[in-house]
Length: 132
Image 1 (cartoon, rainbow, N blue to C red):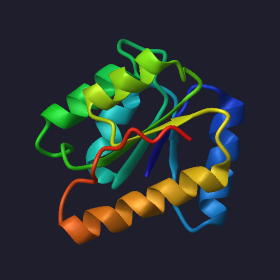
Image 2: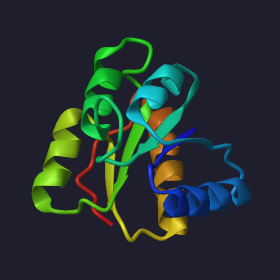
Image 3: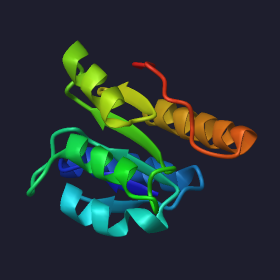
């Protein structure tokens, strides 16, 4: 799992909780680094606004256009919760949109739901307009 968050406090909190729940998050701060590591991940949890040469939305677009990563579960976890951001994230290819503040347990629940859904369908998780 990739956890792509530029704010150290957010990244640390979510990573620690994910580890407690049995996940192995790789903590990443930029979309550039996430793109390099995405092929090895089952789930990518990314912020929308990230430092680097491109942002989280462009990261998602690139993931969806690459055959190696197009079926990965992508969750937007962002403080940019305005309606246009949610719609942009889903249009870019995010499977789930979660607005901060988001309880770590909510993130875990959505990851598990997406993984179970993908197994049942034998492919990519179904996109949802869920905004928790």
